[in-house]
Amino acid sequence: MSRPAARPAVDLSVQLGRLRLLNPVMPASGTFAEGLDKVMDFGRLGAVVLKTVTREVRNGNPLPRIIERPQGLINAIGIPSKGIPHFLSNVLPYYRGYSTPLVASISAPTVDGFAALAAELSVAGVSAIEANISCPNIEEDGKAFAMSAEATARVTRSLRSATDLPLWLKLTPNTGAIAEIAASAEAAGADALVVANTILSMAIDVNTFKPCLGNIMGGLSGPAIKPIILRQVFQCAKVVNIPIIACGGISSAEDAVEYMLAGASAVQVGTATFLQPAAITTIIDGLEAFCMRREIPRVTDLIGGVITEEADEADVAWLGPES
Amino acid sequence: MRGSAIIPLPRRDVAVPRVPAEDATAPNSTWRPTIVAEAGEVIRHEAVNAEYRHIVVACGPEAAAARPGQFFQLLCPQPPGEQPFLRRPMSVYGVDADAGTVEFLYKITGAGTRGLATLRVGDRLDVMGPLGVGFHLDPTWKQIVTVGRGAGLATLAPLIEAARANGTNVTAVVSARRLDLLVRSSRFPSHGVDVVEVTDEEQTSGPANVERILRRSIAEGRCDALFTCGSSRLLRVLQRLAVEFNLPGQVALEQQMACGIGLCYCCVRDFNVDGQIVSRRVCWDGPVFDIREALP
Image 1 (spheres, rainbow over the protein chains, first blue to last red):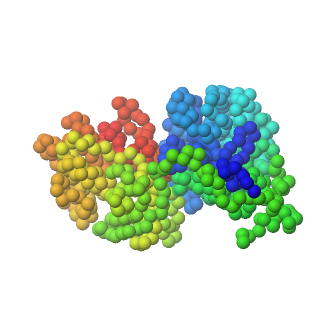
Image 2 (image 1 turned 90 degrees about the vertical axis):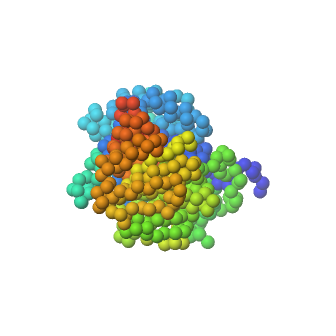
């Protein structure tokens, strides 16, 4: 069979609503910056997701901001941000040099604040808006928007009316009702969901009796949280029809496959980059190798492929052990 | 599109090419990494005194291009009963571009360095770098003064080598708790380096005595620039002298790090830039900074 030499062996491309990505792997917000262009070719990434930007200049939390735990780390960085003018005049122009879709992550303390920020960032060079609604909502005593279906719906509706760009809602795993909140975001107009964020955590130094973090509490990330977030992706995928972008402890191609089988259309890699700076491109290569090995022509064939009921043996033969 | 419905599985008769097409990677074929994580073989690993160990690791050309003051993030093996998760930053002690090696000098202080100490010659160590902004050496400087204490001596050693390679003479003030803990670098060139050892046990390492030594160098016209690493007290002394005599100076700072490459904003410190307090990342904007801007 002849085929054009330019066609990749495995079709790694994925469709996230209106947005088509070269492959399903992208960085998680807050774990990506210009410096990584010395480590990997940004042109290879499915998308670039930038550190969360806020309207105002923020200094971030007191130190220490990170503490390592077995198989993970707790961070309380506090979203230091140089503000919107700096983002528009310095950050955005840098990334315009790359053809990779750029996702701007935003955070605000109010519904109107979110909408205004989304409107201001709906400019050339931004391919999608990721709303980090895991942050405190000052209109509800600091309770994060994504902790309630109502607040999620309210902020999503407001964002939806403020931007025509693809709108991703980044949910928090710190709720007992993530599927309900996912459904509420979809109903209110979200184009995709990022599931999820760090898990609220704490660590205490037994020598000093003091909390290990300047902010006392922080968010746990890394392989330690993968089984929990995987379960949440699975639960959300059951109730929504918009694409889910999984984010939680992915450090290998197999982790990405696991999330896609649970229902994710794409994945974000964060903490793994701290250990292996080229983790994202390694995972892209690994995903292609996995699909080739298992004779899966399109990576999208993995989405939601987890087998939870008895299936026809003929259909699952290719999923068996490798020969 | 998802939910309980099982996605149609690819049929076995679909032709799947087994070899990736040539263009499967690298939309930008001219791109090359300058920071690399690689598992290099341990060539040497030995104790230099009761506290410090010296490790030499084989590396590729990117790592071997490290400049004095830059650092690497080491993925330390897990020591028994401990699970260090993050990499550990360590400044370059030496680099040999021809041999393809990078060297580190370290003291066992925690889980990471305990793991590092378990490595034997022939084992592999994952080194990521070179990272950060190193020292700037002006070739017109005739004589510089370095002041290092503890592990800071390791950071300053390659600077001293580079200065000598430029034909710049060095007064190296080396400070430690005890004489037997002084890092007497075998890498110090034998000519053009005036080593002044000061210790706590001899009561010569206090800021007042170090200041006397530095004032003498300055008075004798043997100090075109000041460099320091490893002590906040000594940094204050150097800052005062840099201002008083209008001398350029640089300091290599330490801070707890996570990513090491400017992503996470874990290692920020405040700096005084023309009277304004600004926050900078030690890993990316430094670890070497202008001595006047650093806040001890």
